[in-house]
Image (cartoon, rainbow, N blue to C red):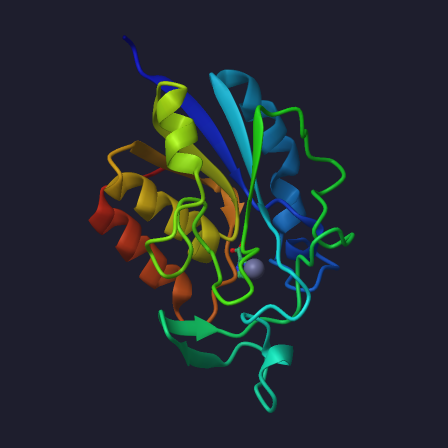
Length: 199
Ligand code: VGL
Ligand code: ZN
C-alpha cells in the first residue's frame, strides 16, 4: 500500500492574525498560499485552538501574572498568554479567507487545566487528541505542516508527528512565528533534532 500524504493547517484563526488577541506578525499573508496548497494532498486537516473561558494558560486566570510570563504547571513550564481562541468566539473562528473545505477539523486546548500546543498531544505530552489514530486509520504516513505559530503549535505538532513515526515536513514560507524570547531558534533546533524536514 502506498503511503498517503496529508496537509495539516495549524491554527489559522483570527486571534493569531493581525488585529487578534495573540496576533502573529504577517499571519494573514499566508492564507492564499495555504489555500493553493490544499489540492496537492490526499487529505487536508485543520487544527483549531479551542479554549474555554478562564483557561489555565491565560494570564488572566493567574492573579498578578503578566501576559507572556512563564509559570510552573504540574506538567512543566507554561507561558501565560493573553485570553485567546475562546470557544465559539470570533477570535476562535478561522480567518475568513481560509478554505475550510478540508476533511477534518481537530480542536485542542479544551481541557481547562492543560494547554495543548501540539495537534497530537496536550502539553502533558501524554493525553492524545485523537489525530494520530485518524491519520493511521486513513493510511496517511506523511504530513506537511503550515500555519501558526511556527515556534509553538507548528513546532510541537511537527516534533510529536516525527516522534510518532510520520514523515514530517514543515513548509516554513507558509508559517509565521511569535518569536518570543528566542522561541523561534529553540523551535528550529527541536524540529531538526526530531528529524523534521524544514523547507
Ligand atoms: C498557540 C500560543 C497559545 C499557537 C496557541 O497556535 O501557536 N500559541 N495557543
Ligand atoms: Zn492557545
